[in-house]
Every structure is written in structure tokens, then in C-alpha cells.
Amino acid sequence: MFLSRNLQKEKGITLIALVVTILILLILAGISVSTLTGSNGILTKASETKTKVEIAQEKEELQMAVMASQMEETNTLEIKKENLENAIKQQFGNNKDFSVTDNGDGSFLVNMNDTQRMYYVSELGEVIAEENILKISTADELKAFRDDVNSGNTYEGWYVYLANDITLDINEEWEPIGYYVQNSENTSIKDGIYNENNNPFSGIFDGQDYKVDYMNINNSKTAQGLFGIVTNGHIKNINLGENCRINMEGTGCGGIVGIVLNSGTIYNCNNYADMEQTKGGIVGSVIESVTISNCINYGDLSEAIGGILGSSNGTDWEEFENEFHTIINCANYGNITKNVDSNFLGGIAGYFKGTITNSFNAGNILMNNNQNNVGGIVGDIFGNVLNCYNVGNITTQAYSAGGIIGYIDAGNTGSLMNCYNKGNVESLLGNINSIGELIGANVQEMKIINSYISSDTFTALDLGSAYTEDTENINNGYPILAWQHDQTKDN
Image 1 (spheres, rainbow, N blue to C red):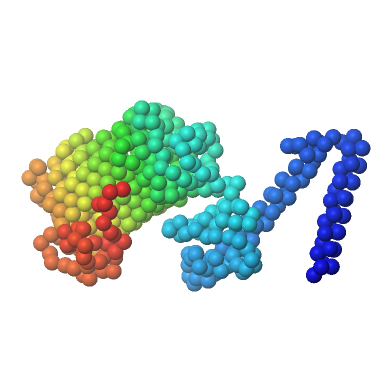
Image 2: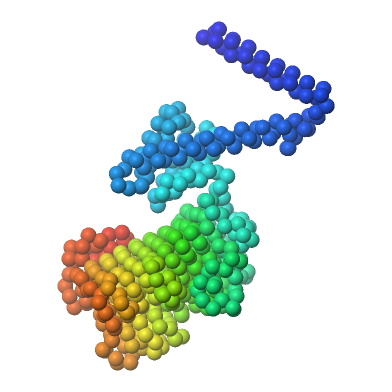
């Protein structure tokens, strides 16, 4: 052991001597010390290159560990923390000093403590290295990030996250993250959303369950919200505070995001703000194939068309004939009032193409104009409503109103299944022919399966595995969804 340590010491001395000798020779050759060791020096650049290579190797090995952890589960790409930890040990060796944080949404943060580097692992297994991770802790940092996005940096391939609650200046109007060109010459949905001068956000934004509060928006522009336009991006775990001042009269406006398109996702986002004008409490409009999941609106909405989502594919389904969306595990508690003419209004969505599942509305809905299509869950739909319920009261002058669906669009052959309505549905016009406890008008070919109205007696067992009994009396004893708990508590 003694000899070994002496040999190591001698080798270390020899290496130092060699480096010093090389430096002296280079200096004698006319190369200055600053050229060697300055910020742009030869040795500095060599060190930076070495670091980049090390990061790339570490990332590659972590990616292999992630893939190995996914192989532990059959028929799914789901990553489990225990499997990931074991795979990292196998890949790097048992002496590797690391920690894994479960974000609770299928993604993870991996800290390599020995190299002091952090990596983000998405729910699909994508690994993002620290150079593409941005932490935001202050309002100024959020605005700087916003300005960078709006200048053309889409942040595609980046993970951006909040590290604190963010308090904005209520006296300063908020410019959304993701720039949408306000062009009066846009004559169709496609003209607007595919404008080459738009600067959308296309990365992953994780609010880490923090809150953005005191946001002020007061205009009639298109694509307004905390985010304006998101393309192939993912927004998750963000709360909009109750002190926000929001009046958005334009098209495609929502509390969290104005317009989401392509394969974007909105996950676990909550709105606590009352809004005087908007299209959706969470999202204004979705285009192409978008999923909204685990989102809740608590704020009262005036002149909105959907508690969670305003509309899908604008209002032109023919332009996006083969594109369908998903809303899952969402809820609305806010009261929604509509005085200005509109042809659709729903507790979850106003105008929707796709499937709404495992969602509910507990807010009261008042449509105080003589337009059509009001529903406790959705105003107008081409698609399916599965495992949903409404307990809010619906009062309307509309000619078509239902406890679950206001109107079923022509040609719809979808299903209304495992749903129930306990809310009162009342027409101020006295037109009872197009008022229904489940569906308003134009049933078309939609199948109604195992769904109940207020006079029916039923249990959670009758409704299926998506439901459970209301043992805590958070829904007046009526069956609740299995994912549901007491969301009425303060934020």
C-alpha cells in the first residue's frame, strides 16, 4: 500500500512537471499566458470541450438507463422511480452518487451529485441535459423568458420550470408568452395559426405547482393568456392566482393558454381567477390533436363559452376533418354567465370535437340570450362523452339545452356513456321540446348507454369503475369520480 501511494505521488509530480515544462516551452515559443489560460485561451477551450464531451457521455448513459427502466414494464413506456434508480446503478455502477425526484406526472429530475449536473426525464423517456434546462424564480426572469420566446426562441427541446410563486405587476398589462400576429387580414383559422411570423412556445413548461398571480390582461386581441400560442409544447403544474385581473374579448383566449396546436398537452393547470371576458377558463382554443388533462377552473367566468376549454378546431371542423382532441380528468366549479349572443356554452367545453371523459361540472350556468346549445358538460359536440356528471343548475334562453350535452352535431355516431345529471335544466323561453336532463336537441345517431337523470336511483357501482361513492360528502352524497377529492379547499 505504501509503495502504491508513493508511486501515485511520483506520477502526480511527474505530470505536474510535464505540464509546467510544456507551458515554459510554449511561452518561450512566443505564446502568451493569456493565450493559454484566458477566457478564450487554448487550455480553457480544451477544458470546455472536455466538459461537453463528459456531459454528452453522461447524458447518453442516462438515456440508456431510462430505456432499460422502460423495458422493465411490459406493454407500456411508463417509467417507475424504483426501476429508474436500479437502471442508473446498473449503468453507472453502485458507487455513482445520484438522486431521483419523482415529479408526480410521470417525469423525473435526476441529479448527478458527483458531477453536480441535473437532467430532466420526460414521461416518454426523453432526457434533457442541464444546458437545456431553465429555472425561473422571479417575475423579471419570467418576463425575460417571455421576451426571448416572443423574439423567436421556441425553446423546443427545453425544460423550463418555476422555482417560486411569481407575483406580477397588476398595473402592467401582461404580454403573453408566445407571440401571435394580430392580423386583420387572417380570413381563416389556418391563416392565423400558421402565420410564419408567429413565435410560439414549443418546449416543456413546468410550474412545479407554483402560482402566477396579479396578471393583468385587458384587450380584445387574439390568443391571450399567460401563454399566447403553444405549438407542440407542454404546459403543466401551474396555478393562476385569484388576484389576476382578466378581460379578454378576442378569439382563442384562455386563462393559462390562448391557443394550443399540433400535439400539445395541458396537464394539471388550475385557474382561481374570476374573468370578465374569455373563451375558456384554462384554454381558449385547441387546433389539430391536443390533450387537456387534470385541469380545474375555480373562477367565475363572464362571457366565456367553456369552463375548461372554449372551442376545438375553431368553429370549422371541415378544415380539420381528421383531427380529434381529448379532455380527461377535468372539472369546473366556477359559475358561467353568457349575455352576449353565442351558439354554444358548456361547463367543460363550449364547442368540441373528440372525447371528454372522467370530468364533471359543479358550476351554475346562465345563458341569458336566445342562442342555442348549452350543456352541463359540453354545448356542442362531435364525439363522445364518457364517465362525466353535472350537478350545476342550467338556466337558459337557448333553444337547445341539456344537463350533459346541449347539441349533438350532425353525423355524430359517438356515445354518451356512464354519465349522470343532477342539475336543474330550465328554459326561460318555456320551450321544453329541446330541453333535456341529458341531451338538448338533435340526438342524431349518438348512443346513450348507462346514463341517468335526477329522478333515477343509482350508485357508483351502477356507473362503473370510473366512479366511487361519496363517503366524505363532497358532492352531496352523489357518486364522484375515482380521481376526485375535496378540491373545494383553499389553494
